[in-house]
Amino acid sequence: MNRVGWIGSPAQDEHQTGPGHPECSARIAAIETHLERCCLAQDLLALDARPLTEKALEAVHAPDHGPRIRAAAVSGQSVVDSSDMQISSGSYAAGLAAAGAGLAAIDQVLGDVLESCFVTTRPPGHHAEFNLAGGFCLFNNVALAARHAQTEHGLQRIAIVDWDVHHGNGTQHLFEDDPSVFYASLHQFPHYPGTGARDERGRGSGEGATLNCPQDPGSADAQWLTAFEDQVLPALESFSPDLILVSAGFDAHRRDPLSDTLLTTEAYGQMTRSLLELARSATGHGLVALLEGGYDLQGLAESVEAHLRSLLQD
Image 1: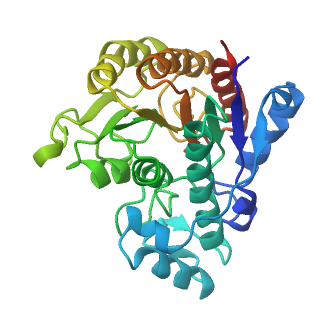
Image 2: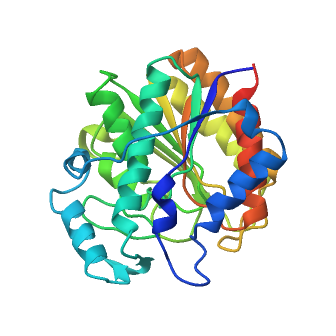
C-alpha cells in the first residue's frame, strides 16, 4: 500500500457562508465521516499544516489582494468582489490555512515522506484570479502550491489537471503566459464561469501550455474518460512534468446540484489511476490533489473515497 497523506484545513469551520449555501463546512465533515465509516482514514497519514503568510500570497496574487480580503472579513462584510463570494469574519484565516495546507502537501511529497497527498482545502481556490476573489474561492490554492514547488524545491515544470465541472478560470489566467506550468481542464461548457473554450491555449510564450477539453451538458463517463485518455494524458506525457497537481473537484458527479454532468463515482477512481500511473513514470512521485468543488454530500464523500483508494493502490 502506498504512503498517502491527508491534510485537513482546521480553520475551515471559521469560513461561514450562510444558511443554504452549497459551499459549506458540512462538505468537509461529510468527507471525514465517510472516510472513518469505510475504514479508509486508518490507511492515510493525517498531517497538520501551518497557515500561509499574507506575504506568501504574492507568489501568485497582487500585493493588495490579501490585505483587501482581510479588511473585508474584519469589517464584517458578507461578500467580497462578487455576489457569489460570501465571507465571514473567519474567512481570511480559513483561506490562509487552506493555502498553507497545499504547500505542506508539496513539501511532504517532494520530501519523499509520502507518495501522494490529498488536501481538503476549504475555501476552494481555482476561480481566484490575480486580484479577484469569486466562485467560492478567495486564494488560488493550487497555483500557490505550483509556485511553491518551483521556488522552494527547484522544480522546473509543473502540470495542473483540473477535473472540476467548472472551468478554473483563475488558474488558467495566472499561468496562461507561463510555459513552465501546464494547465489541463475537463469541464462542462458552457457553464460558470464562461471560460474554457477549446481554442483557449495560452498566450505568448505560454501558448500551447493550456489544454481545455470542454464537455457538453449531459456528458457522462464515456465522454469524459475518452477525453481524459485521448487528450489530457498524451498532452501531459509530452509536457514531461516534474510534478502533477490535481484541482480535484467532484461536482461533475451525477448527484451534484450545480451541474448537468453525469459522472459516476468510479469515473474519479479511473481518472486517478490513469493519472497516477503517468505521474509515477514521468515524475517519480505520486499526485498532490487539492479539493475544489463537490456539493452533494454523498456524491462528494464517495468520490473522494474512490480517488483515495486509487492513490493507495500499488
